[in-house]
Structures are given as structure tokens and as C-alpha cells.
View 1 (cartoon, each protein chain N blue to C red):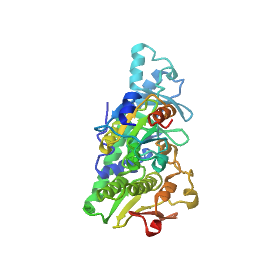
View 2: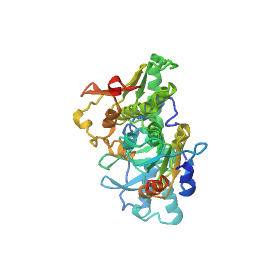
View 3: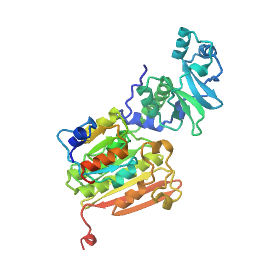
View 4: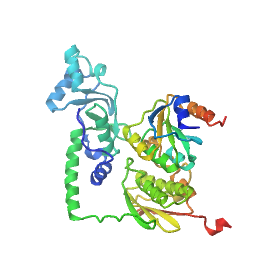
Length: 310
Length: 111
């Protein structure tokens, strides 16, 4: 079994950025060789030999019905049904991936399952490619070369540790990085806790931060969470580089969502993020422009404000 | 109700269990993590089918103490690693969310 020696959540940041930024469609082999359900296992064996490939999707039009792998061919030769049609002997138990998922998904799937390739479908469920670990390693090596080159040219300044409550931290958030989503909110929570802020206040800050963080992961092209701690309040700001919110009123309506189906399958994208964040905030503001992106700011006071006491 | 009640009385299988017993004061049933984030009470058990890392992140931020994965859903290793880090119990059951909810409601003496 092949595995890709990249851990999808503890690898260095540069690698993580790459595997979340790159989509499956950037990496997969396009226009794969296919066979019809009527073609014999023998035909497919011939195709494999001629094209030096080890797996052939069986399709009807653009719809995938199954896949015939080298193992299936060996079985067919062994058991004497090599002349029979693919439809009778192909593997129908398919795991398919979608072309706009991040490459990290493909790595996880290749490592977790015994399959050596996954068919890739577009939004319309049409077969558009096939991904193997070789596709991924080749593309990653190319991209890593580029990244190292860039890194050598610019050295990132380290962020200071936070022994005191007051201070500012910036977290870069990558598009579709679900595995690391929550890191900024967790750290905000821990910092407030370490300084004995009342727990209902911490909970509100954590909720606001998490919702803003998730919004960046789900909807933005990437951005930043900035936590700014004062002696009486914390301000959490989410800034992104687009694409901007066309109608803020819609976005603030509970249940309104533009999240795609696989985001929703993880339990996110229910249209509650911004309303939740606003509800737990003492002050809340949102501005969005189509090109420059969106900025959301949530302020949470540690102790009741004078008006609340009265 | 304690975590031990879920394990011993209801027979829920612990996939990760923090040291010592845990007091659970309330429960929330939902598969929408944003909904959980916004509405789940603190010191509660979350009844859900969402078995992945993000469930633990949401639970931790919302102050949830245990996660019950319904309908035999398993938990990937990275979820259990996160649960250990955040000290949140993860249990698995063949019960669906409705059944788990009424059983737990009885344990909490809400019915």
C-alpha cells in the first residue's frame, strides 16, 4: 500500500498551506482513459498495457459506474472470466472525490483506504479526472520548491510570547483548512482563562472567535484573525482578501447560507455563524466590499459595563 | 448524571475517557456544529453524528464535557487525539439521536 508521508495536521505550516490551497483539480490527471460497461475485461487489460496505467474508470457518458483495477484483471485471468464484460466484474464500491476539495482530502483518503486512485467528479457529478499519490507527490514537489525559494527570500518575524493579558496576536487562516480551524479561538480562550476572566465571558469570546474563524475557512480566500487584548476587553477582528459579501443583511439572517454541500456535511454552513457571533458580542461591526474583502469586529468586555450594572 | 452513567447504565462505549468521573448537567442534540456552538449549554453532553476533529473544537469552546456519537459512528484518531488534549469524553452508541436523547433525558431526570 502506498502512503503519502505528509501528516495533514501536524506538518510544517508551509506544507499545510500548500495542501489546503491546492485543489484536487490542480493536481489530478485530466481526461482519464475510460471504458464502457460493455467492453470486455480483455479490452481493458489491453488498454492498461498500451497506456501504462493501472486503473480504468467505467463510464456511461460522463457518469462513472465503476472502476477496473489491475487486481480485478488478475482476478479475471485467474478465474477465467477475462472475456466477460466490465459491467459484471468492475468494482462498484467507489469512493469519489470532488474537484474543488483541497488536496489534503485526497492525501487523507489515499492513506486511509486501500485504493490507489480515486475518480474525481465535478459539481455536476461528471468524471473529470483521476488522482493517484504520484500526481500529488509530483505537484507538491514542484510547489515546495517554489515555496522554499520564496521563504529564503523573506524571513517571517516571530511573534512574542504573551505573559501578560494585554497584547495582540495575528493568526493566518487558510481557505478550507478545516483540520486546523479553531486554533485561534482555542488560544484566545486559553489566554483569557490564564488571566482569570469570568467563564461566561470566555465562552462568548470563544464563540465569536470560532464563528469568525470558521467563516474565513469556509467562505474567504484566506485571511487573518486578530485578537487584541486590553485590560477591560478583547477585540476579535476577522479580515479577509475577498470575495466579499454581496448582501450583508442576508448574511446576518439566521439560516441564510452560501456554503457548499461538503462543508455542510461536516456540520458547518448552516447560516448561523454571523448571527451567533453578533449575539455573543457586546459590540459588533461588519463591512464588506466586493474586491477588498470583509472585515468583522467583535468586542467583548470582561466585566459588565456601567450601564448593565445600573 | 455522571459520565459513568452513560458508560455503565446505558452501555455507551467510551472511545476516549478523561481521568476521573465527570459530572454532566445538561444535554444538547444537534448535527449542526454552528447551532451547537450557539446554543449548547455548558457542562453538557452533545448527542450527534458528527465524528471529526471540529466537533471536539466546538465542544471545547462551548464547554461541552462529553460527545456521544450516534448510530455506530466511529471517531477518527485525530478526533480522539484532540479529545485527549481537550479532556473531552467521546462515546459511541448504536442508538440514533432520538433514542440517545430520551435515554439521557431520563438520566438527567428531566423526564
